Amino acid sequence: MNNAVIATFPTAPAVLSGQALVVRTLFDNRGSEPVDGPSRRQMSASTYILRSQAEGGPVYGLSALMTLRRRSPDKVGTPAAETQAIPAGQKVQRQEDIADYWNEGFAPGKYWLTVRWGAAGMESAKSEVAVLPLAVESMSSFVSEDSLSTVLAHHRTDGQVTLLQRESDVRDPREGTFEVRAILPKGGPVSVATAIDIVPAGSGRWYAWLRDGQLAAANGWGNKIIVSAPPIPAGGELLSPGFQVAVGTGFFATVTADGHLATYLVTNAGIGKSWAADLGSANAPGKVRWNCQADRSVAVSWEEPGGRVMGRSFDADGKPREAAPRVIVPGRPVAWGLPATGVPKVWALAGDATQYVVFRISPAGDRAMTNLPAISGVVAWDVQELSPGGSGMIAAMTPGKIHSSRLDNPAWIENEAAVRQGRDMHIVSLNGRTMWAEWIEPGFGIRRAKLP
Image (cartoon, rainbow, N blue to C red):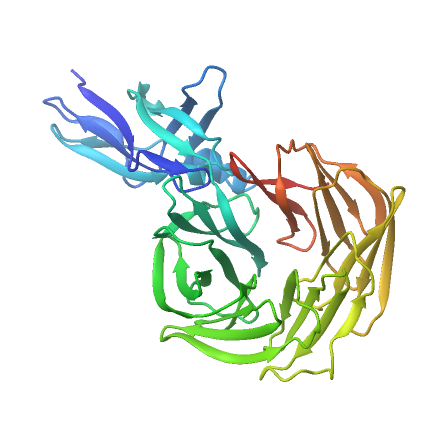
């Protein structure tokens, strides 16, 4: 008589939306004779069902094979089922991250979890797990080489802050899960910055955080922290992103309200001050963005209280390359930005109730323009330019929708993705062609959608 049973249990009772959800799954032969069970030599053949406890709530079907087919649809067939003899009284155990089998964060709520093993028509009893919403206090998310590198600070209900880090799959920025890196005690606001590659850097991914005048950093990869750098005193605002400028070396910066820019290098030996300089503006800078090159020179742009966008560049030793800041946009734009890598070309959006103009302004002052019809109720903008010839995209988020337009063929297209109170949208491309939008959705977490 076959007295085998299967069971699955989450290794933690609750996870955040988008965080790794590791489960422990058992095939337990409780009988007196050997029985055929799941093979240890084959990838998981189990199917997991994550079903909302709320009536009409979401249901997720998850398996290793479904995920492999999604990621490599032209290369994966249906492998022949393998079994192995499980002796009497013995168990086969496997741990799996079922969140990694899904390419979006699970909707927050309470769920029942079951597992099925189709080879024997077996299904487990229910276990319980909760998915909690991400309360994003700050986030840094940028493309590095061919993946989307993200670090964020989640504000917990007990006042503490959880730092999470994520690296996407190279084919799709939705693929990949957050790993918890640290839990910070109660304190002031936390700002974060991931470090993206300027040169091939290896040795994991550096990220930094600034809180209560203390700058700290760590290097994480996969589900591990490789090294942590103790905090040092630092003032002002942490600029996002940071950069990986050599093997095992991160480069970060802060800027104060009076325009003092300070840079830091972080290695296995810890965080050290690099160079410091003043932006040289008579007015306190508001929004500040920076761009880094392979030779470690940087370009910095900022918005003055009156609305002008200014800029100044510095060499690898922090020496200004211009005698004074230059005016990039003379009046207050609707929105503006500066890419973190590549040509430090500022983009700015101007317009009225009927028409918008997107300017892309090169370091030499050359301007490219795209005219677009105006859109009402926009809460977030972003531009991604992919080549000097003007190809790229502008995206606008309104309540409920994302609108996008190619810069070389301007016409607004409404995306099918539904946006619920989204904020802080930005657009990315992993391959220089396909474009994606990413945004924070309060009460949920991080959402992403492919743009047409």
